[in-house]
Length: 494
Image (cartoon, rainbow, N blue to C red):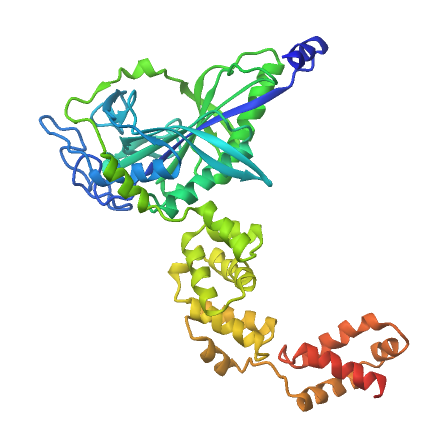
């Protein structure tokens, strides 16, 4: 607090940013939260609906047991306490995408509480508290005609297919201190959800959504400042950009002597700015009361233990094993564990080819470069751990140089052909025959008298150029090690 008063006296108040995130994750169930309608994404609008999810009179909802199981699985992975009894409630608000005029959610008695998620930001470890994990149903989707937002549009259409899809809300403590931390937290959480197979976490499809609450306060102060909620962030980068913008706005308003208004704001990713949407509601505005048509959720200790056993190895545990046991560089391990299928591919490959660091380098380098360029995952192509292991063994055997192996790999990935077939068709094997390379070396020496003279006068760095000429003449097939030795031998006259 001393620092607080010093800052006031000298007139240079410093502020810290406080961020809490609400992550909404659609659960990987085949049917909706309270009815048997399909949850399949991309179906024709208003085809995955029934009287229950559209709130017709006289219908009765039934809770999806699988959704409860997946939410418990998530809560356990987040080190939460599973509450002995949780209750669904009606959250009242009026909007066109909510046909019942209330959302079934959990309020005073959520499914799970008091957990945490460890993240790593720029080499520093941070522990972010989890306030609660609760279940609810999703709302429909509005499609605005003629504009991205309702403001400026000619009208809006409603697709109720998403209405009633099981939604899990994960609420963090206000422990996040920067936009960068917020993005890393969301990305780490998304990887965890994919790992334990409860959500595909595709922000671009809306199966993972983030609402961020941001405030600032004088450094050393413990009381929270007035917060604003930021919406419409459909990627991890967008989360960081939106919160950087809102952080700057808060600081500018306070420095100019203004006051922050509690409101919900919309992030515009074309201008990287936020704008006001509506005043921020308080809990009492929703008039919560227990859902009379649903019984409390009371998971037995035996069921919770059974779910716990199904979780398996979590991403950070896997990263630690990759780094410590397999000596994979930490940055490569981060990339591998971000995609469970890629990490599985890595583990299958090292069963066939034991050099884990080499396998990791090829996967996070050449293979990911190919996949990212085509917006595909490793499971979308017909490439196997056996093919990668075969390629790497050919490099070790001297059959392929690293450069040739990259060319072979590119053709294997793009055509789906076998490694041996690509090599046979293109003749890409490395030339290791000394007699054949001697002929190429002799021609290089003959055609490059000036570099040869420079080398013989003591400028040994020119050897790199001469080896390059051998590789060029051999179309990259000459063994560079043998080429170097033969050049040295012929240039020294021995």
